[in-house]
Amino acid sequence: MPKEFVPGDLLPEDASPIIGGRLGRRAAPRQRSLRHLLPLIAALVLVPMSGAVVRQGHCVRQGWNGSEQFWRGCFSDLPAQYQLAGLDSGLTGWLTSGRSPEQMPLLSGLMSLLGGFVPSGVGWLDASRWYMTMWILLLGACAVIGVWCVARLRPGRLDLATQLALSPIYVVAVLLSGDLVVVTLVLGAMLARGFHRPTTAGVLLGLALLGHAWVGIVLLALLVSARRFGDREEAVRTALVAVLTVVAAVALLLVLAPDVVTGPVTAWWGQKAGYGSVLMMPDLVGHPLPGWVSRVVALAGWVGGAWATWIMAKRAWRPATWAQVAAFAVPVVALTGTAVPVQAALWVLPLAILAGVSWRTHLGFVAVEAVHATALWMHIGAASDADKGLPGTWYAIVVLGRAIAWCFLLWSIWYTPVDNPAPRPQAPYRPGPRPQEPVRG
Image 1 (tube, helix red, strand yellow):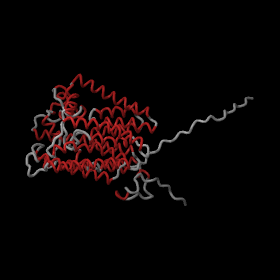
Image 2 (cartoon, helix red, strand yellow):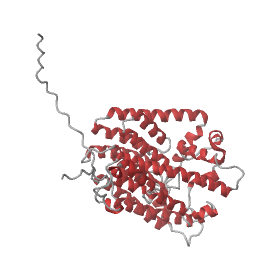
Image 3 (cartoon, one colour):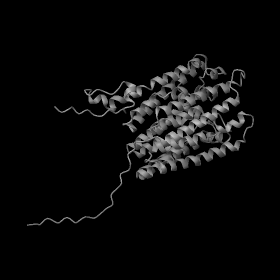
Image 4 (cartoon, rainbow, N blue to C red):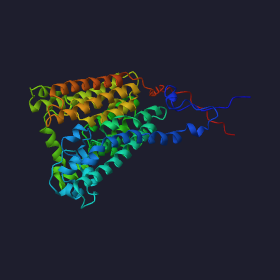
């Protein structure tokens, strides 16, 4: 009697034992399907997100103020901006207040929009709790969507979606800012591009560009990577739609509220080397660099990021996808920026996971990020209690170690084996004999 045909397991062999082993030969085929497994994997996001919420416990009870939020490790820029920037006026205040936000238009507008939904008449602590709760729900939804995008992009590697769903980076960095919204838009653009919807991909990528400048190197990675896959026409169309989306939004905002557009540029231009940047190390040991040095290095980093896209697309041993080229270039831009905040790990890690890095590389990178985040809060807290805080020299050592870890991540992305299909070579055209016409009777 012939054996019953059993479809292959979607999970790789080395990942199956971790979650209970391979399915039996009599299991229903639908138990192996992407439609059945994807909701289970997406639900795993609740585990690290719950850890991120628990980490905010002290600040939820006592408020996000004073030095205690640093000692407890529950600092978040979201409630801080709500309290300091007058976000309770909503979108109307965002457009008419004349404030110059440091965040780019998408994030500053979204922060103001959510601020307008906070109930009026409550105290500052309850208002901050309402505001933080809305952000927790929004960022949790973004995390689920990001996992869904990775699973649809790499259906044969569901271990990558599982990595992203269970990543401890959510505990470390997700509630510090709204950056995960931008990351989700980038992943959504990659998914739309994978389904040959260049217009949708361009709109999503344009919105992401309105949220963070590093998305510009992702756009360049799209154009560079498309050369080896022979789909430059769709890539150019996606890029044009993204640029037109940005131009239209910026033009409208320059008419309605120009400070919303010029504020982030002015803030960046006047910024010295900030937390997380290796350029801050001389300042930490008592020898600060001139302010122009950080701006020059940041601009040079963009040149280096553009070079990295070309190198990854040209020299990779297999044709690198858009995500893999972007995963190699974005860390270069981020690491050379005027500041490398804790949430910068959210910019690079989902792309690195999509590129195929291992659990070992992933967890090692997150471990270093957790050490840096703890060291940063202790160093900031040293301003109020020098005996309890971390001296600048020790924080400089942590920053250097973090930069080395980022370089190792780049090395891992470069040498990570990938299973991308190689472009099919097209056979040269050779005219054959002309078919004979049928004989008519």
